[in-house]
Image (cartoon, rainbow, N blue to C red; front, side, top):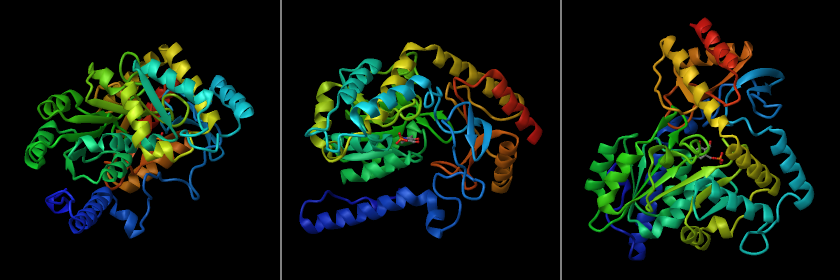
Length: 418
Ligand SMILES: Cc1ncc(COP(=O)(O)O)c(C=O)c1O
């Protein structure tokens, strides 16, 4: 992002304030959509979409290692249900029982009558799982970063984001009405340079990044960021949507993976992926959670998650906790697919992230490969997502419940594709 998007000074007088807002909004919208010009050109494929049969793929069963899609039972390597809990019988039963008891949701916000025993218990259990004093759960993981920005905006002067940060970080940051800068993807040296060049004296920075980046399955270099932020007393917020449940010895996510605990480091996750439920959450100290409740409009002004979804989340969390062997199986499966793909000549990292991504020589070749695999009973995603090149990427997500033979089948079919 260039300096022309950033006002030279904060809004004081109203004219200055209007100019600040106009420039910020224009600049930030340009930043947000810089990689998505296609959207405005009205060209296919749409943002975040996948190349699909006419009318789009339709999922006709719960997602799992085998899933019914558009009338066909396939080996499913799409989505993000890393422990395949969304269709787990206990998760379904928990959701159904809650629906019978409480109805859909309380139809009012949590500042009044909108707290339910299920939500209270879910927040207690999230805190327990992540080893924090408290937690807050809300209607969508997409709101994770909005909550974090709203909670921290008065403590910081400028915000720095990874240049392939998730859409939800990009949407959230301009709600702070503070200057926003991009640093190069997973590049601590560039972050250090930007902090030095852009921060005004006494300004506290907020750095925001994905923990695991969903398009290529790579992990942010968090220890380096923490060290760089130390002299500025800066804050680091991680969108850990793909990491919670998956990374770290106890599934607590990216900070646990790196062994970091620091009271200027915050994170947020989702129940919608590894935990088989739904909704976003932030585990933190009681003081920080109270601060969120007092300062975030989405707490006061929104209906909480549907109660059956929270009951399903609670059960999914319980299963992940009581069956750590799922994480072990996931790690073994990740190692198996990465080893296999390396043998086929693909460039693979060695991290434990259950996402493998590859590209072919042209967008047409990738569309064709996705459809050929689908026709042979294997679903992989063709993603046009944050950080993907023009033609998108082919991505296979690995689940703990994939059997070794499922993975070998994917490898065999990829070999046949050549
Ligand atoms: C990095 C990242 N953050 C946030 C979200 C949003 O989470 P949810 O789907 O739970 O709203 C996603 C969803 O895919 C994501 O990939």
